[in-house]
Length: 318
Image 1 (tube, rainbow, N blue to C red):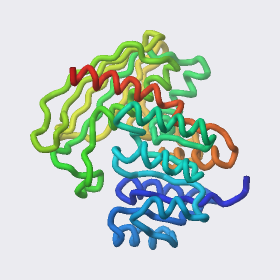
Image 2: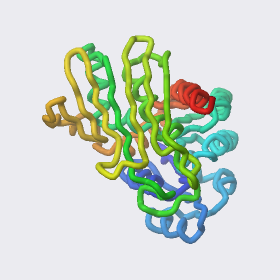
Image 3: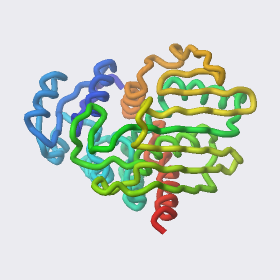
Image 4: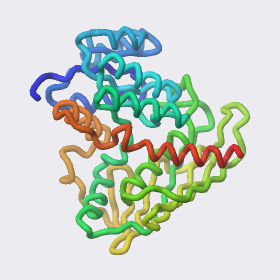
């Protein structure tokens, strides 16, 4: 319980740095290895955050005795395979969203977790943002019931850039990455599985090969509905904005901030030990390892999200 948890981080790009900043605030955690595509850049990050080992080979890091757990911030297409490799090597794993972009690969990760009993969780950060935690606490207390969620996920990203404006080695995806946040959160907050799902998408980008605009409708067994609009073409405020419409209140969540339906700010500073959703996600990962328990946002818990995404992809390609 008191042993230092030693972490290897793969993918020290925009999101990898957010995890490293979060880990700095957690007691009993040491980053021992950085794995990057470019050795020079990985070494710069390792020097900044005190990691003694740097490599371009994940397998090399997984073989080390001074690595207990791995955080994967690598391209989407590597997530499932690398998660399985980590668990085969006896390491706990937290993989950034999405778990997969093929459902059978996500199911294989869940099967490996069940075989090994290791902690394996996915970076569904919305479960951990104080704004959404506040709403969840109201739901659990029986004070709020979701009737509808209206969600906008908007970016201006017509070239293959990451959140820091740097060129990406892979292509982002509205359905398998960005819709995954909302599909999971909708089922998590309603405590009910999606039973109806529909999607339409705009034209496929000639060079990126992906749809740049998408609209999704969902309904759960409980009857709650969700409307999700996604765009890489939005030249305006960027990010994801959630409107919870319920039987007793309306809430608007913008990342870690929360407002009433009349735009009155709600103080969520006391909801958890931090206002940083990524740090809170990492705290849950470390706590689950220490306590030998299933984490919130475990691979098993989030698999229903990817089942819905698979269904939507089949619709869109039919």
